Length: 206
Picture (cartoon, rainbow, N blue to C red):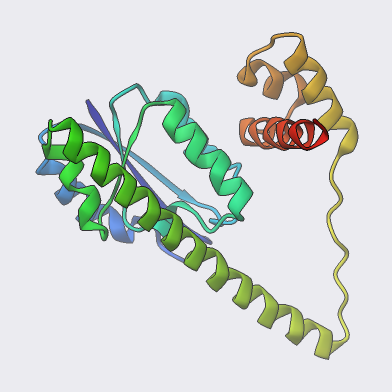
């Protein structure tokens, strides 16, 4: 098993390495090989280069170690579901340094105990992710209000519908998500998000 340490800060003005020392110390108690992944990206972005690399490198049974839930995600709910799906798909154990209930999973072989703790942890992680998202949305709203008072009106970013359709077509042809991302020249997280949204739309039409 490999412990994959993920450290993130929002901008280059914030030192993403700040938490690395304490996480390395925490990881040393697990007595496993460790790999460090450090990046400066917003937690509101699903498509993060270093996080994508971590997920690509990960193997079943590895541990994803983060300082706190908001260091992993400030995503909208539907995007956080995509990220959780990718973590689950890779068979990663998510351990959050400031969430002690996740630590226990590293040292228990009791299937019943693990199942109960997984349920508790999933609820707590979802709650903390929601709080991180709401905190971010409040901050964005304050910024918008400031911009409105100054008379500035930013234009919204429109979805690339042509690219989204291409992703769906290639998926129907049986290409892997990595192959689709390369063919369409987009991040793999975008592929996951588009296909997940397409699946939801299909279900609602039944």
